[in-house]
Structures are given as structure tokens and as C-alpha cells.
Length: 155
Image 1 (tube, rainbow, N blue to C red):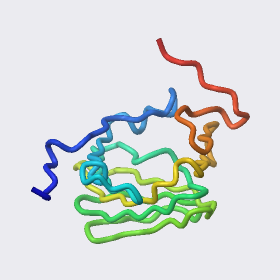
Image 2: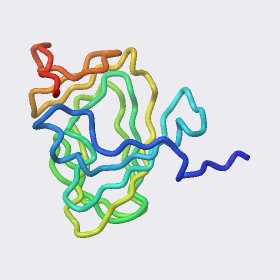
Image 3: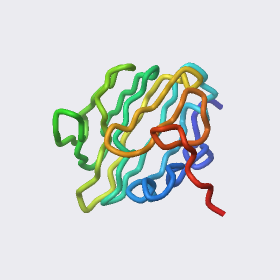
């Protein structure tokens, strides 16, 4: 059968950001649909943002394109240009290498569902977080401070 079973898809609840940067993203949940389908060239995620939750810390990718489509609820896109409200049917793309730190915030009182699509270029991709002391080097598994020093591991 080709149909992806959402209930059996790999999921990730929360975030890998080190404290205190993890706090606004702790309640997010991603179903990794691209992984469930065995895709290797691009990723597809279904993202659930409960009220008050962010999609990510503001960031941009050096080598990965991103596309986001709002399926349900309302969210606020925050970029270098300011804030913009998004609702069902609204979508946006972020081209690799464009220094425009972005993320979505759910400021409503209801869950929001977003479909995320992006390039899989982790080995070549550096992630820049323009407003916090956080960095992710190409191919790295662990976040560091901007100066390259690792965050202390939690016990």
C-alpha cells in the first residue's frame, strides 16, 4: 500500500534546541511524512503548533530551500521585514542562502497545522539564527554558540 499512515509516521515532539532556546518550541509536533514515504531529495512534514508555540527559532538556511503551506488555523510569520498573518491556503517559500531569519508563531487560541517542504542538504547546510546565540554547522548534529563553543549537555 502506498498511502502513508499518519499514525505510523515518524514523529518528533518538541525540539533539539538547547535551553533556553527550546522553550517556545517545546509543544510543537512534526509528522515526518517524507521519511515515511522514503523520500531522499526533499522532506515533507506536517507540523502542529498548539497555541503559544513557535515553529522554530528565527533562522535561515545556507543550502536548503523551504516552503510552508497553512492547512488550518492562523499563524504569524516573523521575518526581517516584520510580521504577516497567515491562514488556511496561505503559503510562502524561503530560498536557500537568503539571509531572512523567519519563523511562525501561533498567537491564536486554537491549534494550527502547517505543511513544510524542504530540500535535504544537511551535509552542506549551515543554519543561521540571527537574533539568538545559536548556530548549526553543515552536517552537525549538535547546536553551538555563534562562536562555535558547544552548549553544555543536559544530564
